[in-house]
Image (cartoon, rainbow, N blue to C red; front, side, top):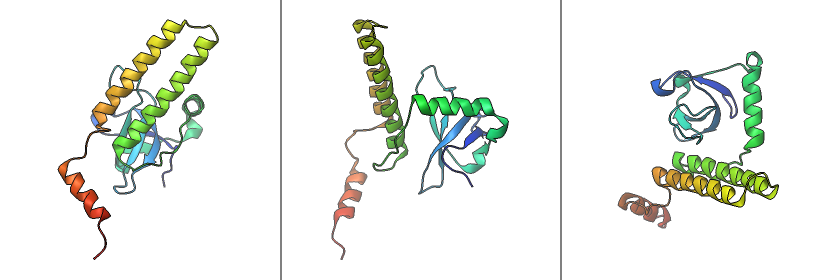
Length: 164
């Protein structure tokens, strides 16, 4: 019924109710959808907001009646193209991958502006440094790169063991 790229309006949870976004990916294990909000309505940053929702927490928006939203999505996909994530699927890994791809795109734009003489080298450096700090903060919040817990170590050992 739903597919990646569909435009949706969020019904719940309350802190994002009424926000609009598009279906970014589907978690195979749980059936939940990762929704990327069109605008960050949660905090003051410009980081993309990805939330995990069940199908009863959002409704499909018909694009034929919302051409301006369709244009926003097309512009977003053009300016910030995404490649499919092929690593171990967890919500944290998917979110970090989206943040990493956005970081890469923005660094590319900043470098082009500096090369074209539109911004100074110092300004480019400062902006890239700020983006790097955002990416590091995102990595820490998501727990990417932390040593595995004792339970995860035991699960990994069981996965590698020979069948009996």
